[in-house]
Each structure stands twice: as structure tokens, then as C-alpha cells.
Amino acid sequence: MHGINPLDRGRPADWSRTSSDYATHRPGPPASFFDRLSALGIGLRGQRILDLGTGTGLLARQFSRQGARVVGVDIAEGQVEAARRLAAEEKLDAVFAVAPAEDTRQPAGAFEAVTASQCWLYFDAPRAIAEVRRLLAPGGVLVTAHFSWLPRLDPLARRSEELVLSFNPDWGGADWAGVIPPMPKWAEADFNLTAMFWYDEDIPFTAEAWRGRIRACRGIGATLSDGEVRRFDAAHAALLQEIAGPSFTIRHRIDAHILQPK
Image 1 (cartoon, helix red, strand yellow):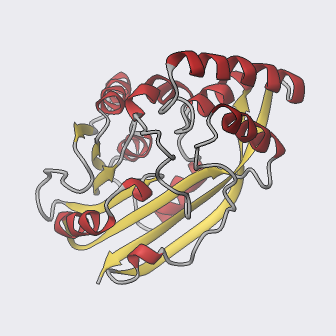
Image 2 (tube, rainbow, N blue to C red; image 1 turned 90 degrees about the horizontal axis):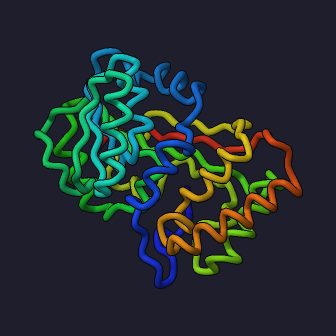
């Protein structure tokens, strides 16, 4: 999310610990997001795409379904294992590797697009920018994107966040204001903006899926002990039973910036 601190005070995140909930409960961006990218020339059949911070391959697998030639990299081995398993279950051709965004070990000039969804804030930006420049073929673009719930507009998301903070007051991801800059500040010196969009969409969840989605967030599954996660989840289940039905929607803000190296 734009403007969110990538670190929680004194609590390092281990994303591999969230892989099961990521794979089962964390949804990728909706079809409307990929339709917009396709209209802007991203995710087309035969296009060579590298997905940085791929996680369980939510973007990479969808691009592969659309016929793109995709490689996804992530530093969390557990996430990459889940991405490989999910891709194999669908018989997708996407390739996944454990590697940091700053040193992907992929061939120079091999990709027409490099994508990074919900993860650029965790990168060493100067090194990642240099790596993106090395990886992109002439005319290639970097796409950064986010798919974030809106606690200031969605009361249920706000109540879930309040519960997260009661278990982990150091979590820095709460109360996102929803502001999307026309151009990311870190990109101004090195890229030209070729396109951007943002919009809101209500994303459907069951109570079980929303519990899993929140367990997968940095403030819970990636940082708390197993016992703390279980106690949080029980409290979250009780909260949802009190304030929500078995299914509901959560308002999300979705954005993307398409950037071409200067």
C-alpha cells in the first residue's frame, strides 16, 4: 500500500509462515484489474513477464492463464513452493524461483514487463530499480500494483484491523488512508509514467475466507507465534459472528502504475 511502513517495530516478518493461508484464502486482484492491464498491453499472449515478490503467484498464474510466458520470484521459499504447487495443479507453464527482487538471477533484457504487486515497499528501491533496468527489453515497462482493503470506508475491515492491533500493537499496516499518488515518489527520477489507474471494488468473502485473509496479513501470520495466531483467529471468528453474516463484501482499492525507464 502506498505510504505504509514496510516494517513493524521489533517484529520481523516471515512470509513463509503465511503460505498456507495465502494459497487458500488470499484472493488475487479481480478480473476487472487484469482487463484494465490487458487494455494497456500487459498480460498479453506470448508476452515475457517477470513477477517480483510473486508470493503464491497470484499475478503470475493469471498472466500464465492468459498465455503470457511468466517467471515469478520471491525470497520466501514457502511462498514459492505454494506457487509451484498451485501452478502445477492447473498445468500452467509459469516458472517460480527463490530470489530477491534486487538480484533475480534472470537474463538481462529478457522481459517485456516486470510486475510487482503489493510488494515494492519491501524492496531496496535503488537496487531494485537497477535490476528492473537490467531485466527489461527495449520498450519494456515496470508495473507496480496494489489491492488493498479500505478500513476508513469499510466498517468490517476497520473492526478486523482493531482486533489485529489488540494482538499486535506494533503492526504498521493499519488505517490506510487510501491515497494513490499520480506518480510514486521513488519512481520520479528513473521512470516516465505511461499510464495509471485506480478504482474501488467490493470483493466477496465468506467469514472463513476473511479469517484466513486476515491471518495471512503481516501483523498476524507473518509475525505472531502459532499460539497467538490461534487465539487471534478464535477472537476474530467470534467478532465476525457478532457483526457479520456468513458472507459479505469488503471494499478494496485497486491501483496500478505503468512505468517506462527514462
